[in-house]
Amino acid sequence: MKRPAFLLIFVICFLFPPPHAQSAAEIESLLSEKTITCEQAAYLTLAVAMAVPREEAFAVARERGWIRQKLQGEDPITAGDLSLLIMKAFDINGGLMYRLTGSRRYAFREMKHSGIFSDRSYPNQLISGEQFLQILDDITEGKHE
Image 1 (tube, rainbow, N blue to C red):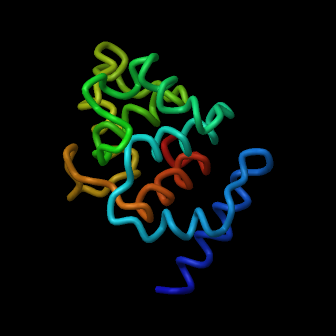
Image 2 (image 1 turned 90 degrees about the vertical axis):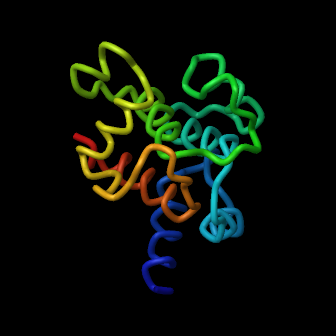
């Protein structure tokens, strides 16, 4: 278990080149989180997708409708909300229903269909730090295509 975690930390550190690079301690801290917050998810997703600074990431995602208005920064993010955030931030087209509705339901279904989420995942499932980093890695590697 320690070797895959170390390998994941190593890969993630190089996926975020400066000035977006995260300290190893911050990545390690994120790996140990049982659930990540909307603010953490917005920051890291937008840092990778479009180089948005940490202070502005959550507000930018909220203004653009990528995170539901009722969610606060400290709220844990669900698989459905994370799917929508990632699909929008990385400009992933998705299937017909996602393109028609742009909803988190169909964003989640697209991510599940592409293998980002397992068949046992569900939209209201909370996301751990390790899961989140694996999802970001899969997206940046083009697994969603």
